[in-house]
Length: 151
Length: 138
Length: 128
Image 1 (tube, each protein chain N blue to C red):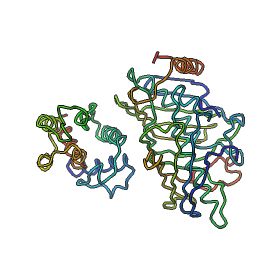
Image 2: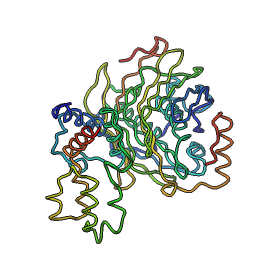
Image 3: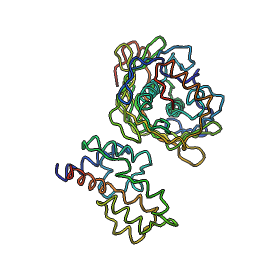
Image 4: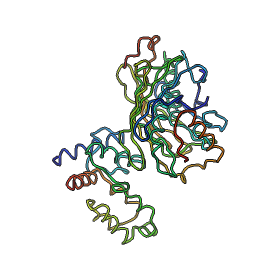
């Protein structure tokens, strides 16, 4: 199972907000009993969407990481064939991180909502990324429609 | 279960408490994307480990079952990266009961003696047809 | 905003950031020793205070990391004269009297009580 849990960005405003879609399919190997799609992955879609919003305004020389999930709720579940629409807004931004709120829906039904904190960690404190890995990341961003900031 | 994340159960007090292990191998595919060139265990995957452990704990109780859906998460935080080659110990303990048949748990993750993350979360019985019914919140 | 309201709002911020019940949070409680705050929580508290009081808090203004990193401010695990002046300047609303008697750097986190946050917010609101 791969871990790119956003298929496409519909809208993306650096540091402010984004709207993304994620399709749920049996093809990913994530399904549990009763074809249940894990709520944890709905959360991850919200986090990856917010992470991208925050990443685009991060200071050079930092990596964007999840700091904390304050609260998340999953009122209903998603299942194969669903297209999840995910909307995330930055509530507050600081040099050290961004606080975001996100909602994921399927046909207007809420499948997940979360308030979370994305932090900017100095690269020195993270494992080093190789040039090849960086190129791979650039291509991935390109295919998802995320502007590449050269970092 | 197709998506099994727990490798071993060390201790289990049925319905109350469970200690489980998740070993992290470089070969696990999600490390390719999280992140390219910098494999670290995603927070949502640690959460998945906690939820699966809680399910096993509840299933072990008399008359228990493992059809539980994650409904809420509170205060999930991580102190440091967890990387391939490490084994994470997940300690899950039942907390108070919530609304609509929900059960809250407290979870702590360790590598060795070092705490790497903690959270509170709630699960609720999954009823068949729940999704088709439009999934009204508990 | 009166003192009582500030105290209540600060307690609420701390409770939210640390995942505590509000009745567990009182002014004399130390963030780290009593309420188990971890590094990530200080940033969360900063966010919560900004949101609750509509104030803007500069990086390192409320929780100055420099005291733990600068060799001139701490020597052999003890906060130097210069370090004490740094703390006085950075945290004018903190009561350093007790700390000065035993200025080990490991005791610095204990300066950060809920009461200190209340005093900080009062200072901040008065200045705005």
